[in-house]
Length: 185
Image (cartoon, rainbow, N blue to C red; front, side):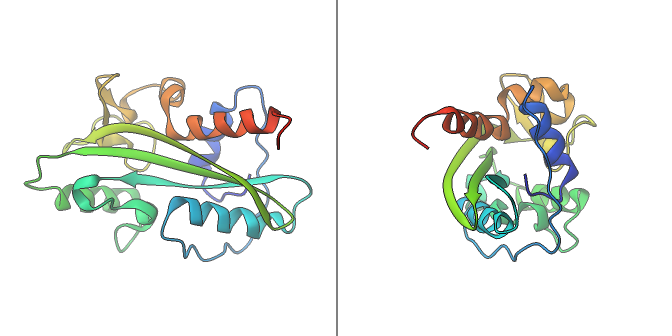
């Protein structure tokens, strides 16, 4: 896996169960010029796979809020000028002031590439809603504000193992593993 985000690596390792996810040194990342998660994941996978032996995967993920036109979307990690979690969350809540439609979804797209060529992409989503007041101390990113109705709590309030059972990363990773095990790849 090509990533510089330790939170994402932890989530992928936990979601993968007994399959080991091995991070590769990434060096300077390519510029994420895509307008979709698919485009950015493919861009990163193709770029990093040029120097890797065998298959490599990279991902792009974030939060989409329909009432904000899909924002923060591909800009989730750099939504605010400073790009840190606290500032990103504060800006999200400020933009939602007075908005009653709080539906949101986490999206993860994984791209698998080999020698610079993208072989497949996989998408996972989880639906929830945004709450104004942060709840919980677990997770990272928007998790303290992402309320998941089936749990009756935010992603930051539940154990990592429980979150990963339904997470967008888990869903995309499961699709990738199904593809890897198939004879049709």
